[in-house]
Image (cartoon, rainbow, N blue to C red; front, side, top):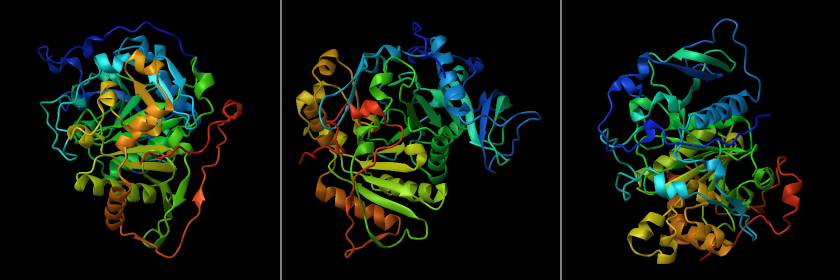
Length: 446
């Protein structure tokens, strides 16, 4: 088991204000000027899409290697080098009393040092702009490893592999403004400069990462433009709940509140039978959303969800995605907070907190930026915030119809499915039992 040390964090030279005069390519960046001739660690999962093999004598990594040794081990290494904007391990965190079990974190660094948004928030689809900040400008010291499919039917890891000209690499890099221990980014085909838009191959890559981690503590999130993505360069957020630090007593046995919410399967007359994907709606949760599960293969599940996301993109509907349960459950949340904010429909009290409700907040992990808000945080506050995120019932049904049309699914008018309460999973232990008030759902504010 890993141990986490508390290390004073200083600002890296690579994290200074971009308004300074640009450095030459000698800084070893992720652009096409530097990346193709670079050597980086490479983790290959089993598959047939990548022509590179493990070198002779390379053993298949042990089951916990990807998460514990590689991802978290390398994250701690970057922390020891001072590459983060602030020390997230020093942030105060607590469970907000009440029936939902929302988690609150005081993260003043997100307010003071997080990179501001540099694009319009009223358009989900926007072209990539090389003049704006993007991940090709990141130094390679922030990269933990490259991640892709291997040729052999087993996973392998190379400490140093030539990136080469033929393929744009998928990289896993630190998030320099983290919300939790181990917070990283998955950046598909980084040097191809893809805008922040879901596509089938990139979404499948994100699911493969969840499968490879194989841990209920490991989650990936996606924020579209207009739903509080701050960089228009394709990326997924990745967090692992703090398993090793002082917060262990809070979170070891507690899933996100949305993961414990009741669901109701949507009966279908035609469409997904051959793919084995089930779609449910969330019940008694403050943000309306869809839950995707099953699939005859990972690609089947990925294709259905990615088509749903692409439908929202094409209709200019902002959304957030949570990939949970080692890639087996995916939550899709169409949202409207930025629209309400622009129309002056969000109360000043909520705006003053400066909380942008993206995927982690919607899932129940509230990142608060002022000590006053953290100390006074209540379940009622969280419910009010998330109620402003959620589509109305009528609008949600309209958006659901768009999605079902896009994935060629027809909802059955005859069959009625019983609501299903999410079963407690094996990683929940006695710590959860001590919170008898934590029921499987919260009231939706109308």
